[in-house]
Length: 270
Image (cartoon, rainbow, N blue to C red; front, top):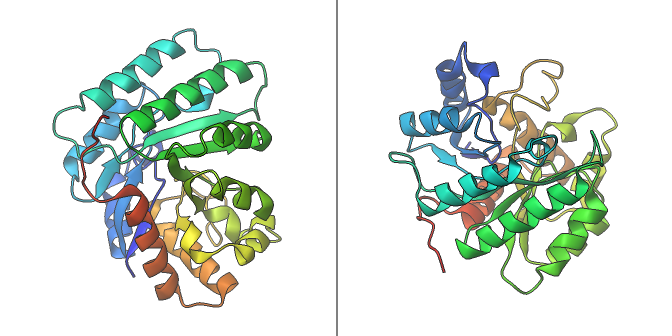
């Protein structure tokens, strides 16, 4: 199969003991490309290092994760750093393929809601400026996320909703706002997963596959560390739900990812 893991944190410290081995396992599982979202400055160098070592198969993103805004008095400095890197990418890494991961996460606390919204909006504007898609993290904040995305309707905003977890109505609403895809990961394999029923109703052309490793591990490895090679379990589950072969799902979702993220086209400012 020809797969793309559209949301991998293989640079995370969880992979320090066996990162290259995990990378090779992904290759052997048919994963030809990994998209690596940024979190914040504490892990930028690890992200860049992995991309420098595997520039033909790793595509970096740049952004500030919403939970990195919480209780961080320097979060605006972090946003300035995101803008700096988009303007002047570090030497030796492939072009940024998206602004991400960005968004809203109100699961832990709603105290920083306004700060997260400000950071989200600023990074959406950066994505429009540099003609890049966005990779959106949303947790316990779907109404707020949809409201913000709706504001950009007609401006050419595009991207992926990573770890999509809401209903089909939200999917339909977001699709009216721009060119958006929906990242499906390990949750779809969980027993009695509500997401599985939503995926049955979604169009295959709207889906991309992801792991979010080392998190959200799919069955049959749930409870263990996730890794990019496990994206094939997600592919197989989506195929089962859609009544297709895994090869058909792999081909379609890889084409979807290529359509949104491209291959190696450098970011261009307007």
